[in-house]
Image (cartoon, rainbow, N blue to C red; front, side, top):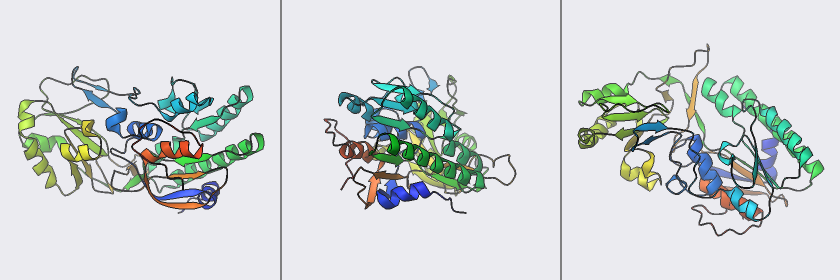
Length: 350
């Protein structure tokens, strides 16, 4: 069943759309939102994952917000832009940004908050994060009727916001992006990484945010679509090659990322070893809701992301390729703002 998205279709038809827009590594929300905002890879903005191992304190930490590179809003502020953020967690507390938190599972709450804020003050740039589609997709899978219905709801909400802005301020630039895709996991597997690690004589632990790591643990695992593995002991480091070779023999595993490969993908700090399962597989059980499946972040090499924009001239174009690091420089180019920031990406404006 195909979603009916007339507004998004109109942006693609009257504006510019990137046909093959790629996420970066790893396809997790916090590092990818940071990549979109900064125009640089995780190795530079410093947000390597949703949660990371603090090796000094041997504890798993989450809610990472300490960007090492300035987000695009800093540049807008320096150019006298008044900036509003609704639900965009990476912009909370940033210089020159009015941040409003709403119920992220209700897309209409974003529009209502936006209209309320615009009654009080004029804003030159507005950042909105629609996270309800991600939540529903994880719960039911990307092709479920509830996921499609949520996408259609967001499309309707965007149209209402766009119509309001046209009536009140006239011409504006609109940019729509996603930080990653979502794949259908229709084949849950009983693959147990802890058992694999045990088979080579090591003790594994599944890390949880805020939890300290046992001194007895050789291998720490964090459970994501791209699973990150930390080697904590000398014995674990000595058996790293053996572990990689063992993982390569497992049929449901698709890709294995070594330290060298992660360095090439601009995120060496993500883990000591990382891997992802084949498309369509999940190491989680199916949703408890009858007839539904599990949706997971499309991994780095899977489905493309979304990036489309329409400038005030409504220039129609189709761009072949891009990555998330291109969004910030493209946005500034569309606004005719020069920046001294050394972006990893380039402007896709033609």
